[in-house]
Length: 96
Image (cartoon, rainbow, N blue to C red):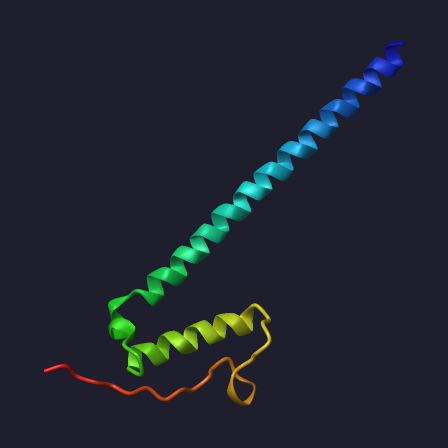
């Protein structure tokens, strides 16, 4: 009887420790994801990209950055000529 109670206590303790470490690891992963997202947003919203106006230099830099991230994550390119980009023509108009 004492042996089965001792084994039960050890098994319960082991299960509790296993569940706890999994939850800590999960929380750590969420924190890492949040940090990574913040760093992407910080770069893409920086004034160095000059507002990312369509067709402007900042827009091209942001596009290349995002394409590089897509490639890093192994996403399949679906753009022109096997790239992540799809070129389209824009017309710019001014209101007097």
